[in-house]
Every structure is written in C-alpha cells, then in structure tokens.
Length: 256
Image (cartoon, rainbow, N blue to C red):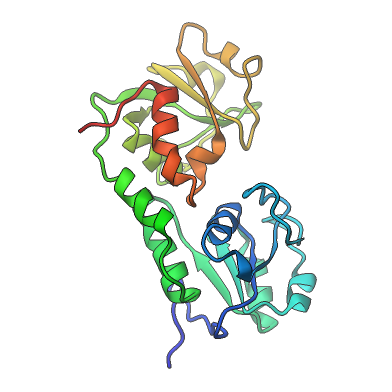
C-alpha cells in the first residue's frame, strides 16, 4: 500500500491504525477532539478548545517541544503550513515521526483539508459537523459588499489581506477588504491610511485582544464590530456557528 499524501503532496508513512495523535494547531486540535477525541494525546499551549481539554501540552505552535513529541511516539503529528515552522516538521520527520501538513488559505481548502485529514490520514468517518459547515457556507454572500478592514494587530497596525482564510471568510460574509490589494497577506498599514474608504471596522479578540476601550477609538465615525477571533480564523467545528454569529455581529444576512 502506498503512503497517503498530505496537502503539500508529501508522502506520509501513517502508522495504522492511528491511535496516538499530537496536534500542533488549535483549529486541528478542536476538530480532532470533536471527531475522534480518543486519539488525541498532546496539543499546544494555545489549543484552548474544546474547553477542559485534558491532554499533554508541548509548548507553542512556533516552538513545539520536538524532543518530548518524539518521546511520546505518536502515530501522527498534524500541522499547518502557515501556523507551524518547516524546521520543526523536518526535525520530527528526521526522527521518524509521521507528520501531516495541512494547507488552508480559503474555506474550500479548509473543507478539502478536513476531508483529507479525517478520511485519509486518520481513516475515520467524516464528522457530521463538517457536512453541516459545508451546507451552511454554501449560501451566497449578501450584497452589496461592505468596504471593511480587519486589523489583527496595532502599533503597528496589521490587517487581514490577500490570499488568507480569514479574507475568504470575510468575502463570504459580504465584506470587501479595502487593503487586500496590497502585496502582503497581512500588510502593515500606516495609521493615516487605515480608515481610507472603510465603512466598517471588524475587530477580533485574537491575536491582538481588541476591546471596547482598545481599538474602536481608532475608527472615529466608522461602525465597529467586536467579534470572536476564533470565528474568523479557525477552520474546525466553530464553522458551524461562525456564519450565523458573525453575520449578526456585522449586520449582514446571507443571501437566499
């Protein structure tokens, strides 16, 4: 039997059956815990969902404890091209640990990646939450699009730009990101240009924790929506509720 290939086309010698999984991505941890929780043995410190998750912690997404992960002898480690470092993937593979890397820059890629992860890598039945999320997000976006900005940091201001999962989610919510024509995926924007042609500012609570008193004051005269960052950036079971909750926060109703 040939080895399955991950989202980057790399062959992964998955150990069958998969009983021990380490997740180095919060979204993937949430997805696995909602689908086949019995296989999850370790996750990062940033894996906050589901609440009460009791597995070993192996530091962060950018500085995982590679030595400890190898000692745990997992059947599979799951990563993401954007959130994890190639160096750590290479170190784990060099130590003989199978690593499955996902690539997700759009919602469709998220659905494909989840299908590959569960159906191919983990070889389990596709979860009901995935089917439901696909149904929910199949509705067309509301029109006309609202010109918006989604900051992810301040001092300096950084915003969601082109070729990003969050940017694609925003488009499906009926938003047009005004800074998405810049070359960087998460461009740094001078404060003087931040609000030009912006009709709505969407402020998430991660990675920068925007609050009622930290962020809205930078957008005088512009409507501001404070939202859960997880709903904008995670591609696990939160997608089932993300469209309804974000649409309500943004004042946008999906088209029929």
